[in-house]
Image 1 (cartoon, one colour):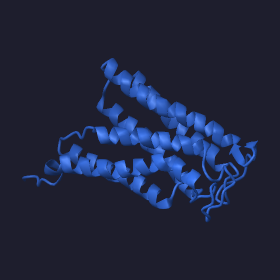
Image 2 (tube, one colour):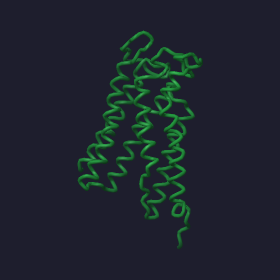
Image 3 (cartoon, helix red, strand yellow):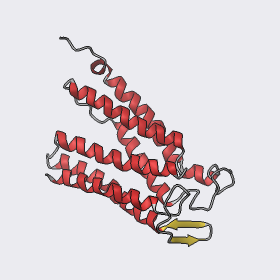
Image 4 (cartoon, helix red, strand yellow):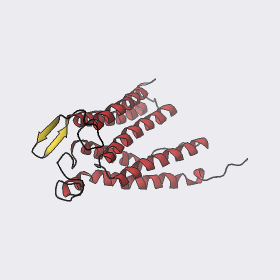
Length: 215
């Protein structure tokens, strides 16, 4: 196993640790309240477990850029590495997004779009691979991934639940208040980019994707 694949494996191993740290915090009734320690500053209360999860997510996100750079720099790009790297990325981001949706930190409709988009793109990639075509990442997909990671990182440290806000009201610290909507802005952008990049992937590969194989 080369260095880029080892880094991807490290990122993959971080996923269950990050998810575990998120679901044991006192966030809402869907979680387990196994570690109640928080950092408190007036209305702001950050669970220690989410602080650690956030730091690990940042490390995992940085490792995503490092393994890609290393593979290109030292000519260690492999088909397995591309697949393994993609799986690690999807499990990391989608796993965290699903947990956030359970806490209503991320809207359910947004989580559905982001997770479903990745599923559709993976299906398209597999269909094209079966026809001997490799679907390369485009710039829209790369920007979407970067913006999404930034958005998730922000939400791991700041969201309406950590500001003692309500999930049904629209006062300044609530779910529909101005602060939380500004915090969610990168995720709104990532959602729009995810739809556009999915359309772009399918449009650019439509000829091969919908071609009929001759017997």
